[in-house]
Length: 88
Length: 88
Image 1 (cartoon, each protein chain N blue to C red):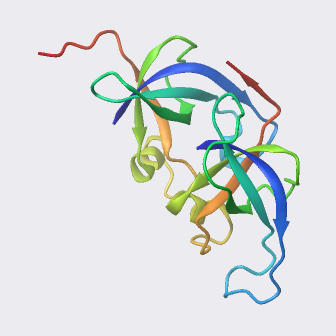
Image 2 (cartoon, rainbow over the protein chains, first blue to last red):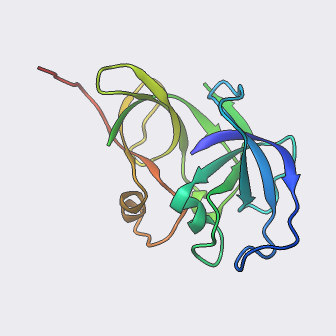
């Protein structure tokens, strides 16, 4: 899992089967010092509460497909938690 | 499996139900030749603390098996605290 900062939202009215009702957010991956690291990704919101400006952690690949119900929703990144605090 | 150095932790109250009651640690990954190799957020199973060198499984099916699950958005798990590494 990686840290990320939600920087925006994505709206798509025409979606493939299985993606109905899922919120998509633009997430900038962060390094552990919370500095931007790499290119932004579009992630599904598996906690249903994330929004722009928040720091989150997200999973990729198969784990992302398992984060949403029902199983194997066709996504490649999913937000699985909102960060309250990072201690280093 | 990977070698990591625990450098901090992440606190989160809003998260995917799987993460309830699990500690999330920020681990600096170390390549076999001792070079830094990014970081990951891993679920702790061995009460690792900041400063510990740990063994990390970074593979989803093994991680789910550790928690007795067939599904779950989990991939990186701390599975051991390393006492020493000998290389010849």
